[in-house]
Length: 78
Image 1 (spheres, one colour):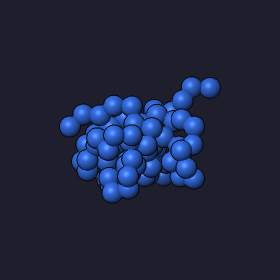
Image 2 (cartoon, rainbow, N blue to C red):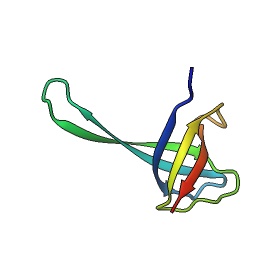
Image 3 (cartoon, rainbow, N blue to C red):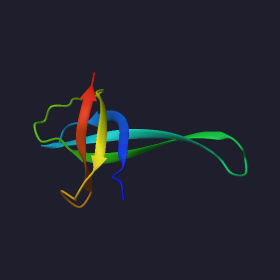
Image 4 (cartoon, helix red, strand yellow):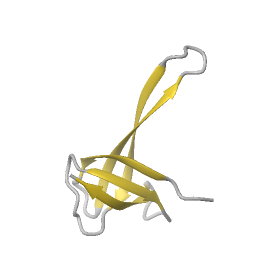
């Protein structure tokens, strides 16, 4: 099965070697037929503490680093 790749914006970089990434997705409600925006936060492993708040990053699914950290940073751009 392919690994998930998500794109989002870094919202926190306080923990060591960890960033919090906010990923936004849009979908159409099945009954209301209205387009909704939903944000979800993911914790991702950042080995070199390279990314700061506001950076746009791509994260990929990987083996768990901890209880909540199941993604790793692939690459990013300012």
